[in-house]
Image (cartoon, rainbow, N blue to C red; front, side, top):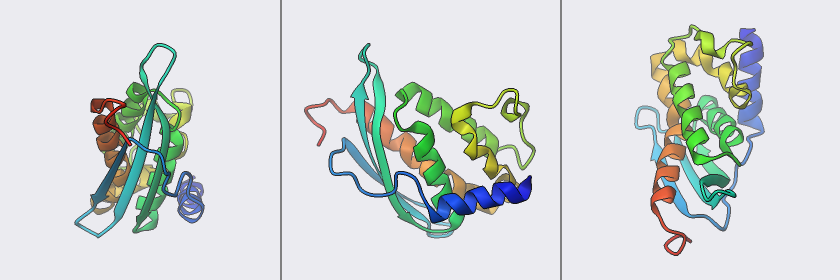
Amino acid sequence: MEQLYQQLILDHAKHPAHRGAQEAYDVEVHHVNPTCGDEVTLRVRLEPDASGAPVVGELTWTGQGCSISQASASVMSQAVAGVPVERALALSADFRELMDSRGVLPEKFDDDHLDEALEDAVAFVGVARYPARIKCALLGWAAMKDAVAQAAATTPEEGR
């Protein structure tokens, strides 16, 4: 299973989802992992759903760094694009819990309880055994949380 997870991470690093710089966005953030130099720049645009609640309408990112940081940003972008902000933040919290597991898959992530949106993210459970690499995996997720919080605090007239 670990080889399958490693392959999934490498596939996301080689063929990242939502990589690029969208033209229309509400907020752009740039995060750096000072430990290793990984970088990610993320652009997000929020849209209201039918009830007026904010949804991650579009999210793109660019970056450089190790396969783990780039693959994690790819997985994150797939997981949160098109979902309500509240759900995106909950997925981020779940990913953080996965990274805090120190390589032991929490029960909530087993096949019977796995949130479909985090399916590929479970591949990073092995990364959680290496404390120096956890920040790499969390970089894109932290940028997303920051961007979504800033965009949610910005009125549409103030956005781009």
